[in-house]
Structure formats: C-alpha cells, structure tokens
Image 1 (tube, rainbow, N blue to C red):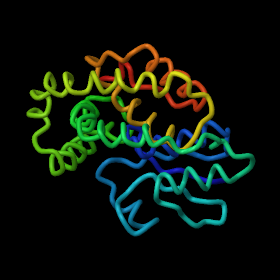
Image 2 (cartoon, one colour; image 1 turned 45 degrees about the vertical axis):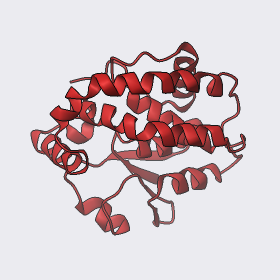
Image 3 (cartoon, helix red, strand yellow; image 1 turned 180 degrees about the horizontal axis):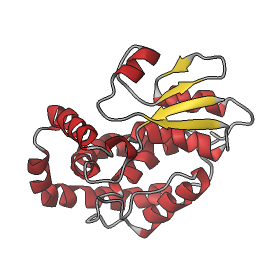
Length: 211
C-alpha cells in the first residue's frame, strides 16, 4: 500500500491529502514529528514534506508532483483549466497569509507538535524563517486589515467554480491554513467553497483548532 508522509498543519501536505481523499485512494497517512529530519532525508535526501511512497517502493517529494501522479491513477479529477486570476490571487495573498497562520500553528492540536520537544522544534524552524512569533502576533491587526479585502476579492472567483483543477490544490490549502486564525471573517461565498472542498476531500478545516 502507498504511504503519504505529512505534517497535519502543512499547506503543501494538504495538497496531497486532498487528492487522496477526493479519489478515495488506498494510501496510509504517516505523520512525521517536527524535529525528525532523519525520516525525510532517508527517503528523498532532504528535509521536506509531503513524501509519497509508491507501490513500487520509490518516493515522490514535491506536493504538486504527488497530486498529478495520484490523479493519474484512474479517471482524472483535475478537469478545470488553469485560472490565471486564481494564480495571481494566491501570489498576492501568500506573504500576508503566512504571517497570520504561522504563529497560530504552534497553538494547534497537531500530531507533529504533540510533544514539548516537537513544539520547540517547530518554533525554532519558523522563527529562523519569520522572526519572533510573538512579534508576528503583535502585527496581526495590520495583517488582518490587509487580508480582508483580498478575501472579498476572492469571492467572485470561486462563486461559480464547480469542476476541480490544479488551482484548487494550491488555493484551498491556503484557505484551510487561514481558517485557524479566528479573527478572520470569510465572505460567505469563500466559506461555502472551503466547506464544499473539505467535504469532498475529507480533509478538515481548522476552525476552532487551537490548543
């Protein structure tokens, strides 16, 4: 049986989890603890997740490569054409979104940070990339004011979206990550889109997901 190595909080891992759930594929999920560099390095030669172990024992380590590979098993689920407007929206929102959800992830009930050692490893990793997490928390009012109009602008882009395409596998994980930020007010059309994909993929949103 195939195995998918993940962090529960990771938006890139979420991409792979989406296609597994959407297609009801026989894939076992295995959470890698924060601070465990040996496992991913042993599998793909670097510390990065997600990683898919295929039935032949080989491994794939890039999230969208995993999505495309798993989608190739049986009838394709990726029917919608590429939407450049959604590409641009993700590019615009990503720097702000990161600074909102990264300091909240350390508070979450995620298996990969279930021990004090793992939680500290997560904090150290993210503070190397983003600086002091408490300072990020202090910047939250400004970040919220910045992201709210972006979410309003997203609403018409997802309102009529029915078929799934690669855009959904880059967009929805960002929205899922933002759902851990309790102060965000998602427009109804965006919230409907988030919940519709959560139901179809079997990957839970993070509303109320706090320690």
